[in-house]
Image 1 (tube, rainbow, N blue to C red):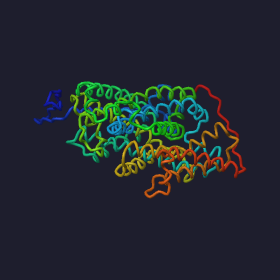
Image 2: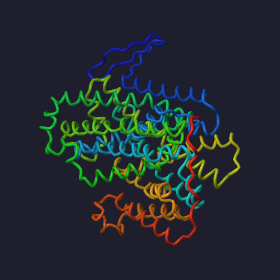
Image 3: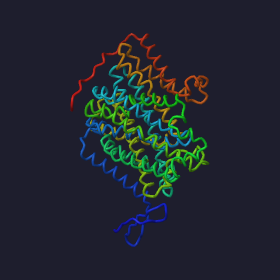
Image 4: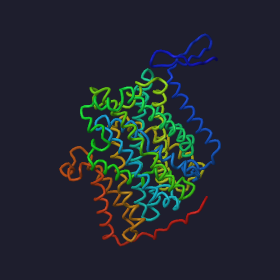
Length: 505
């Protein structure tokens, strides 16, 4: 077979392969995607061959992640659909201020590193529900597991949505929006199914590098193509707002995002699983702080692309804004466009694999092993873990076909961790107020509060303005009040909080 690249029209390069008299033409974009997929599966298969066997290796990378691997895992987890395509979607309407979604994630990661990552690793737990049962009761573990599975499924579904938008823009002749979601699901599930957290971690080194190269080049080139930043602003109806890093969003919204991200990084299964997979508490702590620094600029770079899209396509309906970033990137030269859209898809892969694994871990560890089959053999448990990945992947794909706006849905899902984080903070810093039933009731009230906030015709509709129409401002007060009420009514205190002394492993 003889193969080479040639230029074919303005939008495409072609891959030409000769075999038995037939010539096959493939766009450069398709070649890039195929190579990227092959690389990810190659990493997963290599990890499966080289890594230790057993559930700890699959779910927690054998607790051997160093500072760099923790950092790229967290960055890969953070920089997904909402942080790239979702931010550009929001920036199409509000401007550069949409980048504060990533800024909030960055702050959340740093707070997690300074306050909780090392503590979670030193306790040698693997999930927040496991932590809850150790200090509280079985009911607390069960409701926490159910709540977290729902959260993880919502977030994974959003990665499929973004994957569909990217692939349908990248290769419209091959993928529809729904076809792109299905293809994304195949890759996300396949990579996670094969290699677990180890493959996710090593793949994130490739993905995060590709993300930074792609979005930085695209932002610079797209602004240049319009004639510079001043030219971009001149084409906007409200340049003083769209071009400002803060004016497009109310301070209450930005602060709400920050509170949500601090809340979720401490108790959502994805961040917790990475911290618990670190080789020691120091690696967990430093990895999260480094990740915070890596995450911060990504959102504002992606917001630039959303603003450029508004300047280039002012008549595009807001309902189609999820395509803002892919639409701008496709105006670049074919190689750059292909690399960048592959980078955006890489962002999806990096987040989806970790979240998907987290959801499967919650089911297999905190539901199946704890309540269905406590005596399951280790070799069978590894199979259950992989089957859980597959099943959760299919369920979340169904969710993706029925989801709405990316950032809005993500914020709603992450806000569900409020009750869990409230319990965690009280356990760590005010254990004297903790009672055996605190985890159950606080988590239950948190979930009910979220449901009442978003249900159509909600009885809370009249009071939403009192909380700046941001659910997180409602969630924290009701969780704290519930926790304190339980402290007064329940006399059964929890066991003393004990950390395993830190040591190198």
